[in-house]
Image 1 (cartoon, one colour):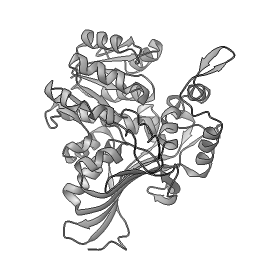
Image 2: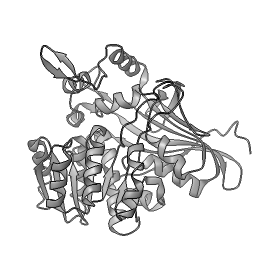
Image 3: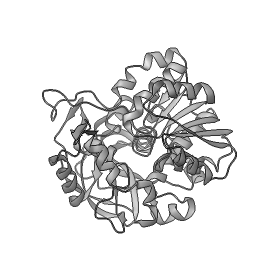
Image 4: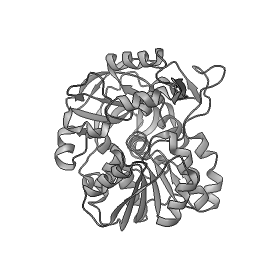
Length: 406
């Protein structure tokens, strides 16, 4: 397989690192606006199959030119969601297959944003599904850890564990700390703000929204992470899962903790979450871009991080025998382990393995995507069975089924 990876930040660099250990890749070109960053991602693997180039991810013409030059089997988008549509459309125009880990941006409902859904995450991509199908190309969207593995947990739950799913709630949490920083997100702050300050999307007899940080609850995460305050946030799973999995309710809860929530509220209060540009002494600057530049690069935080991160889904309903059942399906990564074995911090490594596994399943013909599709369009078992070959694992923890009616 020949791949073009656009973005050499934390996740893009980790994709290179993981892919270098897999023989099914014949070549991988890594493209980034910062050519030195792309070169660093390639240099660390010391593998002649990998090369670095420069690209502006907002320039459709430049991306199309690069696709024509590389002729990849798939283009992997590893930059933040602002650049989804330029890369997506460049692939569409060139007849190239596409994969991402975050979908096109949402827009709140113009009149009632905290009750009614506006433009949902991924709507701009799914609106073009017919074109992709007719051109016999695929766009596998949301193929990271969340969305991605979490969606596959939902598909597995329906196929192998449950006869009726009353609710599927993604719970994401960690006990990660960063030495020397009071506030240092382990993932892109640009994306974190987008997810947490937009009205959360919920599926329950259709899509609706709530106020940011709604339905606070404490969830006890496994493997020593412990209890973390979680709230509803906007996330792609709530768009994707209901399209293929019959669940009464789907929502996403992020374990932010009280301090993180307070900081995000302050950022919003000060207007630092704004994406539009403002004039600062004659210089046009986006407050959110400025905040991103001020905070530490998540890709470089690994040596300072301690703790574990967990991604998973709490499923409630009836098991295959028709009895009340609840379980939490999850994947945990220890930062000390990922740094020792891969040199990548836990959150980016946990994200990066998923598109590489998906590429292997497509390469060997197990998954045969066509058109615009999400992870839950496919049987989850082959994916989950491959996790040990990628030095990872998934587990099921049984939960209290009290209150579930048969």
